[in-house]
Amino acid sequence: MMPGPFELIIILVIVLLLFGGKRLKNIGGDLGGAIKGFKKSMKEGSEGKKIDNQDDVIEAKIVKEEDKKEK
Image 1 (cartoon, rainbow, N blue to C red):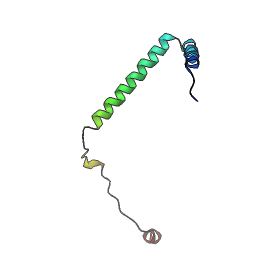
Image 2 (cartoon, rainbow, N blue to C red):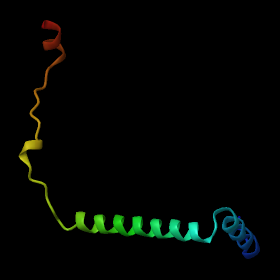
Image 3 (tube, helix red, strand yellow):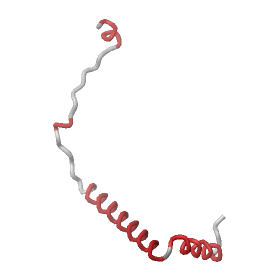
Image 4 (tube, one colour):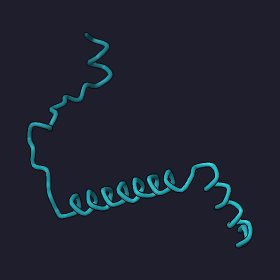
C-alpha cells in the first residue's frame, strides 16, 4: 500500500532533520553525477566497438578422465 501525501511530507521532514539541507544537496549532486557517468559509459560501450585483441585468447587442451588416471 502506497503512503499518502501527508505521510510523504512527514517522511521528507524527518529526512531533512536527520541529514540537513546541505548534505541532501550534496548527496543528490553525487547521485546525479554517478547516473550521468553510468549513462555516458553505457553509450560509449554500445557504439559498436569490437575487441579484437588476440592476446586474450587462451589455448586449452581437453583431457579425458581416462588420460588423467594414466598419469
